Length: 181
Ligand code: AMP
Image 1 (cartoon, helix red, strand yellow):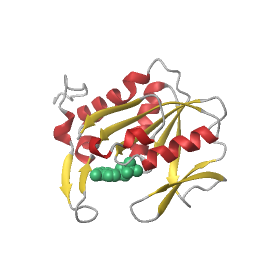
Image 2 (image 1 turned 90 degrees about the vertical axis):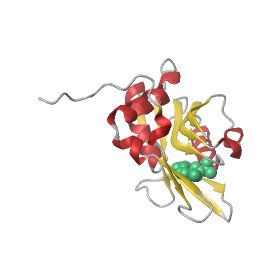
Image 3 (image 1 turned 120 degrees about the vertical axis):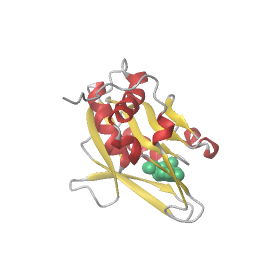
């Protein structure tokens, strides 16, 4: 019988599971594609463990996962921390009453939303996404939590594009990243 490998490899080099795709979705953008990492059970587990580890003692109540790869990583991180999952979506996707926060793009603005009752005052919240670039998206998610009077414990990202300085825009004490580029 073939033995199934379910353990995370020791000190896996997660970077080799991130595929660089030049000029996607438009010319000049180097897209960091995490689908090979998600497809590898050991790498996926190691990534989730690494994202959650610094927050294990923090009594996180809710993980805010940002559409869409933040859902994929936020869900197992929430389970690992014994927390609930809240989804932060692009405008117009959520069925119930929402609160919204807008942020600036290179051209124009974008808006994210959360259900009005998704986070309660005083709850301890961790914001999760796959990647922080300019930080605009995650900063908007932080504002949603703060406007609900939650306490933002920190933000966790698999990848940080360091040169863009996004973490400075978040206004949170703890920003944890697994891989920097
Ligand atoms: P930002 O608001 O600029 O920090 O952008 C972060 C969001 O855009 C995240 O949800 C990412 O998934 C996505 N994103 C931005 N830049 C990239 C990139 N180079 N590769 C992959 N995803 C990206």
